[in-house]
Amino acid sequence: MSEEIDRDQIAYITIVEGPPPRFKRVSQPWTASLAEGPMQTIIATCSMRTLNGPGLVERCRRAWAAGRPARLDYPVRSASYAPASARAEIEIVAARWHEVREGQILTLWVRTENTELLSSDEDDIEE
Image 1 (cartoon, rainbow, N blue to C red):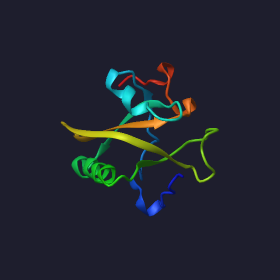
Image 2: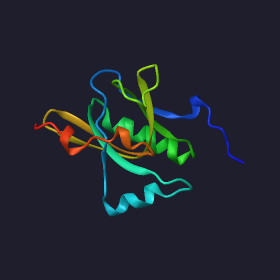
Image 3: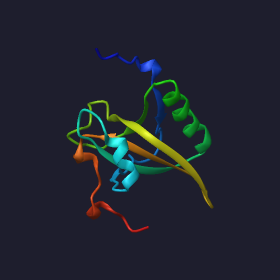
Image 4: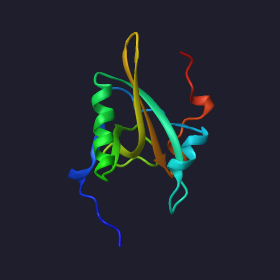
């Protein structure tokens, strides 16, 4: 019997401003354990600037310690997987942050079944 999770029990990280995240498939050996489960899933990663990297990672850790999910709520551009609200959610399975000269970067590993949201090499923009 599956237990329904109330939206209030989910730890959300919400992207309020800026472009949608760019999800890239990862193939590091340790991420294989994150994809285990009854359905085949893909592990992808995305990175974004933040003002509170330690707090966001801690939010995820507290949720996982309590057996609750953590999800990224983000804006989407026109895509077949995008709901009418122009926002989408994806499950966060790992998180870390680090300092850079410009501030803090939050890196999230997410689980998805939807290959459409993964960016391809052609989508990469030279920085």
